[in-house]
Image (cartoon, rainbow, N blue to C red; front, side, top):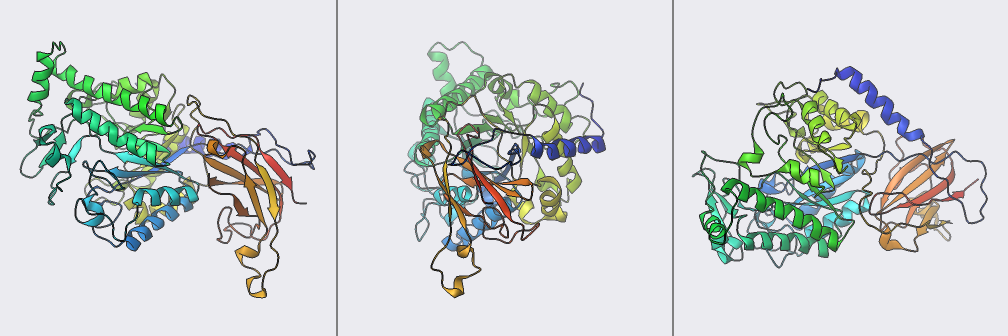
Length: 535
């Protein structure tokens, strides 16, 4: 049985480990002349999956209500992204499909009610929300992961009417009602071949058309049981038996899910190898795994063999939803995390989901310290590489000073997501870097960001680049900022925050002695750096 460590010791370990990451040496690049003055070695960039779920179902996080104007929607999105960037988060997990709908321009499913207030109605004036989120997220040097619910077709308690183009109207034979008067779900039957094919087509449509960094699914496979009612899949089951199927009904349901997960992973990789696939299953596989754990059995109730998917490596990152306190007797956060890590035989990224929105919850409150401690545990446990916060609302509200604490005490510097070396991607090359000095400025422009010298860059193989790491040498210490692949310049002026036009928050006025730049490929590897001395 996993022994729960004393938290103060864990936090000490975390602090020592995290601060040491900034001092580890890495390969040095060269400038155009091939000679450089003696400079300190470039530091390792910290690695940690720092994600947050941005839920759109029921307007939990964004937009805050249906039918907001396009400008209001964009303004809310920018506020979320600015907050994440300020906190040094690096992955936005945006829900783009809540119930066989779309928060993006789709020919396969109708526009979401949660966006416009009427399912099937496009934004007016027209824009593509997913395209907007991707562009703005990348502009801030973060990743955008598109989050889908694979089979839910109507959410619990939904009041609006589905549009004529919704799958419940176009293919009613595939959609099953489930629940009671209060939980009036509609669910695509996973046992129907057409259901799986339709869902896969929706996923791959986004992979093909959008520059997403990841595809993400959560814990909704078969629905959570309501009143112990069986899922109404008689038609699909009878067809399976008539065609000679030998599995039991429960094993058959699990097999549908296994086939879906494996096929989705393989088809994503065949389409765009760098696009990561992440799964966030319910945090308990089965009661008794590990021995101390009791609770809901997703293997038997959701027909989700989440252990198998991780064992087989049908994912690039795994975020089991560990929504319990550290010291819970039967659902211990560290005990469960250690068990999932032990099952990671294919060495994928493990970054558990944590229930940040329980801070300020009147019924099941978490303290801010509980969230901080879970972040540090997931950061320091061998085999774990970060966390995903559920959800953005608690962070935007700064509940009980949560956001302030995470910003000033937990996420102290920018970080890249963990590397994914099993992905077959093109390697980056050393960029061409130059210094651009402003000329011909009017007196009114003096002192503006445009009047500052800038570093500009380009790549000989830009298709290989997902991020840029820009290093500034101030005094005798390198500072790093992370930029999106489309970025090609940044101010050198040390009076500005790296990568922005905002004033520096620390040590303003200090001279930048040198600049270094390196590209990050689709597997997260940092390529060769180009270094320019400014002295």
